[in-house]
Image (cartoon, rainbow, N blue to C red; front, side, top):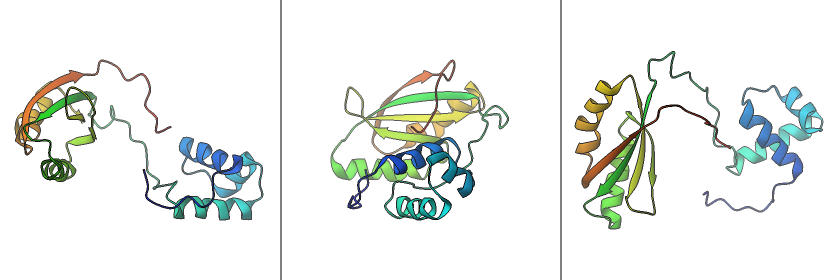
Length: 156
């Protein structure tokens, strides 16, 4: 969550803008305005405010993993040897520096982190597990779950 103040709660137009942009971040402002039911100028003002307040964190292209030869998705449960705050910070920093790790989440449950790794095939994954994941600070053990098929993948 953002630490930014929420002085202006979202109204239905703001929510429509966010919904439309979550589907298509390249939507021209005139099309966006038409879809949310406002004219261009108020839509631009709202859009800038939503960006400034941190509701919109950025825009990016959605890449096709098949075309990029990165079809295998592995979710890795990681248990740490130490879960005190300094160890978590050290682990987080190391994960941020590992481009092989697509996502990382601190978990409340029977393990400490859930990592998402996307790569070419099982051989590539085994190499990443050995060279990257197992060498992260404070790793005690890992357990891997390989995705057979993506069913839904969306930000919201």
